[in-house]
Image 1 (cartoon, rainbow, N blue to C red):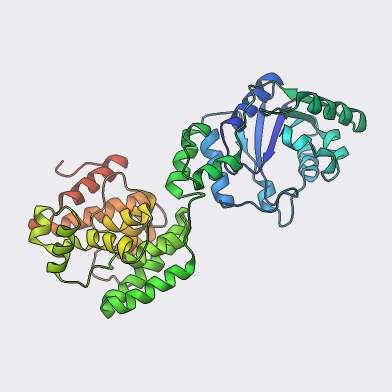
Image 2: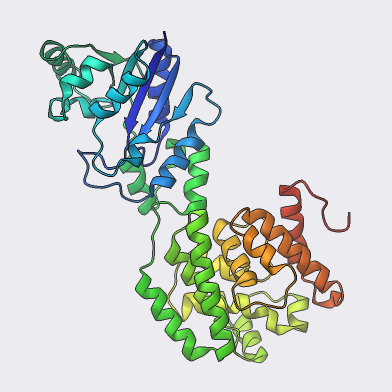
Length: 400
């Protein structure tokens, strides 16, 4: 006979208090396993805002990685309608008829437990474990528990834990207001939020269309067609790898916005705005279109987003420690449908949707091979980018 913990919630995002509750419940009630049960459309919340189902699952997996007894159960995410806990517990009991079930919840949920759908079924199928939050009225919560013990079959028990005021809504609010929140969540979850731009500002699609119309006026026809190709390739890659699609499309739309101005104008803009110019950029000023494009994006097209600006800067050469958006634009620029000169394009187009890091490595590999015929054009940043991905993938670096 096993003792199974079931921890339901939106986990939007999962945070340190969630993990502490699960750990404490396992230790205090000798649970063999704890299943994190992310809600699909919960009956007591209007929506799951700020993140997709896939993001919430990915963040839970990132948080519980390394805990052998913690697992994720995605069944409620697959329900087409509102998810009710009593249905899930009936399923668990049918799957584990001889095991003891423990349903874990926060004290905020116990306040309205009698308003849940069929609370008598829930309490008859599982022992309810309640974690107190900082600021709770202990007398009031204990009174609620005593009332429910008398009202329903089953048992209600407290989880002894250092009380915390952390909430997912507070974390989302902190992110939007740019207030520090790193210490409130597991580091792996923090890294996921940063990389995938969860809960951050997302541009409206109308801005994408407006910018593409601007590019139609500013760019030569061939360059505009390429820009459209990059924009929609970036959209597809963003959908695949979990990045805000409209933000990726804006970076794609503006990546070559300074491509069709003169070399003299590029140099002049850099000099007037303290934009550094390398020796190779002085020799071949067309290489400055990325830096000047980033300047235009911010000052001409009013895009004040550091991730988009950075992706435009490094879309040609790449850089070490590329962000997810950097990779998306770097790859999209190389594989968009209008490209037909580079080698292995069909292979790279497939690889971009299978392993974007490896795709970046292979693009750098082919670029260095091509530029080796004219080493004067070789930017050291391209080599640094190649070496970064080579180390990441366990391959030989440049020159080895």
